[in-house]
Image (cartoon, rainbow, N blue to C red; front, side, top):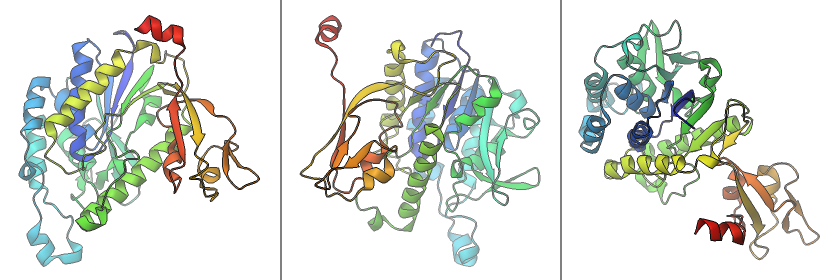
Amino acid sequence: MNSGTRFSLVLGGGGMKGLAHIGVLQALTERGLLPTQIVGSSVGALVGAAWSAGHSIAELREIAINLRRKDVFAVAHADMAFRRMRSPALFRREPLDTLIERLVGDLTFQQLDYPLVVNTVDVNSGSQMFWGLEGLDDVPVKDAVFASCALPGFLPPREIRGRVYMDGATVDNLPVGTALVLGTEVVFAVDVSASNAFRADVQEEGFASVFARATEIAMQSLLELRLHSWTTPPIYYVHPRVEHISMFSFDHLREVVEEGYRSTSAALDTPQEWPQPGDVGVYPKRGVVVRVQRERCIGCGACLLQAPPGMFVLDAQGKAVVTRPEQEWSPIDGEFIRHCPTYAISARPVAAPAETRRRSG
């Protein structure tokens, strides 16, 4: 990708892990790569709005690494005590409202320095609403961003133009589909969701943690379905390694921002892996070898259900066999591996030819 490429920067949701998007913007702007527009869900909308409103990367880094829980989350004790099951949310709206107003003030989308699209969902109809698109750009940015951050049950939804909206991630955590109406050549999508990370003892951490984990799983499954059928414009997909961090953790903020910078810099350092305008699918594409450890396989057939049709068969002993061991994968391929109950399936990068290794060394 060069400075002349028209690209949309899509920033996904993921709680406090989404502060990695600040590092993403830092890596891009240092190389003179400015997105044609930013599309954001949840915290991706928050970071995108703050930058589009004129805050420098240095300012955003300073704000991010000094955030405290009370700056975002305050338990709605009174609502839960008096309204009980009719309480609008676990947390009060005031701390997040204050933070968002500090970052974007009373600006409308028309007044931002850079085009921004914010993904929300109508609570009552279930329809997506992309604030910032033509005809939807005269509302206060702060209201759309709050609505996009309003994860159901955790933060109350927000009324805009007489209707009520919540977190767009409930339908689409990484809203790459907006590229189809934005006229972009390449989509640069940054996913900070849980991916397939293993969690330990979530059930011991209370209902909020269980609900948050269920949300992560649902968002990831929806994303995989959407990206598997994606064609054009091509997507370059980046997944900062923050999946080990809880959505609501404030103990790793500096690490999260730095990982966003590292992962984006690494992507920009491998231009040979980037798609060109007109290419199809999700990138980067890399060769892998898929294997089954026969001693672990119990013949349950989960791989036949989860993998692409025909990729696995059961042999005469009832063991799974890979029909095409060498494949070319994008970052969203291989999700069937985690569905194997005995962890019998693995995928390893195809070894580079000896001549290539000598040249690179």
